[in-house]
Amino acid sequence: MNRSILGKVVLHTVAPVELSCKTEYALLALLELTSHHNDGEPLQIRQIAAQQDIPDRYLEQLLATLRRGGLVRSQRGAKGGYILGREPWEITLLDVICCLEGSDSKASKDDTPAKTVESAVVAEIWQEVHDRANDVLRSYTLQDLAEKRDARRQLNIMYYI
Image 1 (cartoon, rainbow, N blue to C red):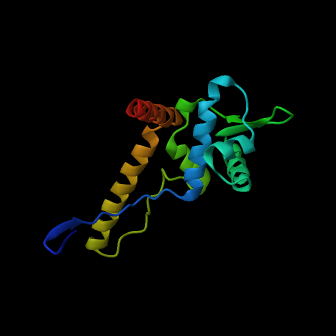
Image 2: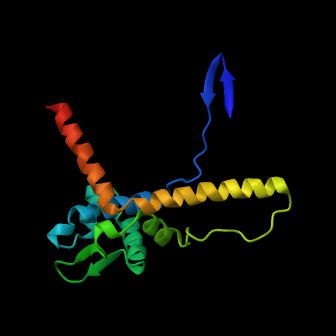
């Protein structure tokens, strides 16, 4: 879709996949756990919340959901807290989204026959968009996000020197 406004061409795009606040906070918390994964020490909710600026109570609910999904484990006791449930390179972004959103995004095909040829074409394209988005989410792991974050931090350090 192109629109001309005062002689300028403005391209409009649609974001078919939006990152919910819940998913963003969960990814930030998981990135924090990834940062400390090699330490083997669990992080407490208040530590994660402070580092990533996430409300404690909300983070508690998110971590409980991620724990039920097997993405994190909790340890009780004075030195208790949360650790990743699997290796960071084994947890994909699609795993996180499926765990939080409560649906299996991999299987979203609608078997209802289309009423018209036009609606069938639209449904096919929308399914392709959905499949490609899932392919991208499946291709990135927590390890990939951590590496991208570390590379960006290095660029910022080099920029300020």
